[in-house]
Amino acid sequence: MKGKLIIFEGVEGCGKTTQMQLCDQWLQSLNIPTLMTRQPGGTELGSHIRHLLLNKTDNQPIADRTELLLYAADRSQHVEQLLKPNLLLGKLILSDRYIYSMIAYQGYGRGLDTSLIEQLNTIATEGLESDLTFWLDVDPEVGLNRKRGDGDIFDRIEQEKIDFHHRVQAGYTALATSEPHIIIRIDGSLTREAVQENIQEVLKNKLQSWGYITM
Image (cartoon, rainbow, N blue to C red; front, side):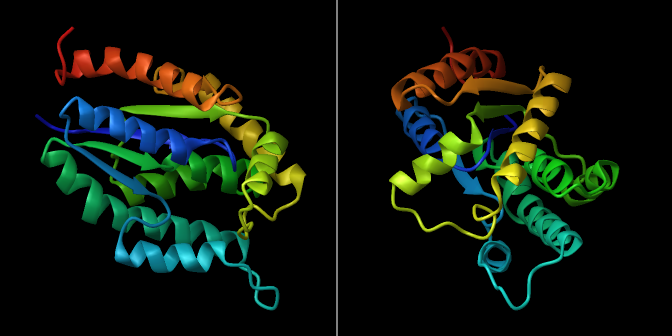
């Protein structure tokens, strides 16, 4: 059985990483082979790229197009080294971000050409699409306040002005509207338990149709 690629998307502080981890624990309890990963990162090369992208340097800011190409490079390595081999092994891959992040952040957030971004995504992924994408929908200010409350140190992206984060959120809204068959909106403002319950409800039906479980 070929594996499936499940993506968790959303603005900063939406809870996607936590929900992905909870989802992984649940899937393991069902004896379903899983792999958790993230973008940028997930590979040795990707870890270096992640450091370049998220660490702020005031004297040498990263140009928007450079940022875009670094994300594309990370994605290309990630697909080739990690995603494809593990999908062939039949694993259920849970990824913290994928192609929609680049459209939302670099397209809507930075104002770069979305058609160019889509071309880069196609090159980087060789057409590998997600089987399911969860969009945890949270107001950007709520998400950033969550991170402040947790005492997290803001990275370069999180330190952007609030207008940037609102543009990113608008991007996710537009994407979810245009691709409702792939992107599932989950209300991320609910409690952690309620969000996970909603995610599992969607996944149960998918797992049955994919042949991982019987009801």
